[in-house]
Amino acid sequence: MLKKLDRVIINIKQRKRVVGIAIIAAVAVLTATLLLIAIAPPGSKVVAIVNGEAITTGEVTKLRAKAYESYRTQMSDEEALEQLIAEALLYQEAEQQGYALSMNEAEQELEARMTSANKTMEDLTEELAKFGFSYEEYLQDLQRQLSINSYLNYTIQVPEVTKLEAMMFYEDYKQQHPGVDYPPFEQLESRIIALLKQQKQQNAINLLIDELKDKADIQYK
Image (cartoon, rainbow, N blue to C red; front, side, top):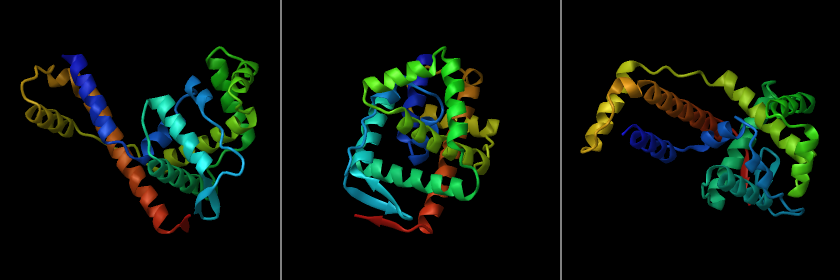
């Protein structure tokens, strides 16, 4: 029954997905799926301008491909555009607040990740070349995401979740889904607390993005 509740928790996470989820997940690990991202074609049509920064149709297509290859998530053009706008706002704020990493720092982080994966930078370059993805563009994307992650780490406080909150979640969920023999609360407590922390953190990120949007100059084309 534990596996069944695991699937339930995964489904809850998917339904609670907000813009911040993908932003955090994108910088968590270096995955092979990123090699399948399509490059935005030159001359792509501009679909939005965020404080002077253009977002193109090619970038929208690129993000949709990333979401599908990484998480098997189907995103609409509108969802991808809103996520790119949120990412642009967060990166701009990271730069203004002094949390943006240099390209050299991003490259050092990339080298450390490759070493941890028992791969060389040459291995990465060769794999990227197979899919027509340049090392420079890959590094630039990583630098951007690492900067956003650095900013969020300092801005969003780690939320507290009490045992009572976790127990209430457990009992409420059992009442909403009767007829299932769930494991005792003690076996699931740590997982539920982790899930509730993630939800609170996502809500905080969403509120931050809303605040940034309110004071930003966003033009849809």
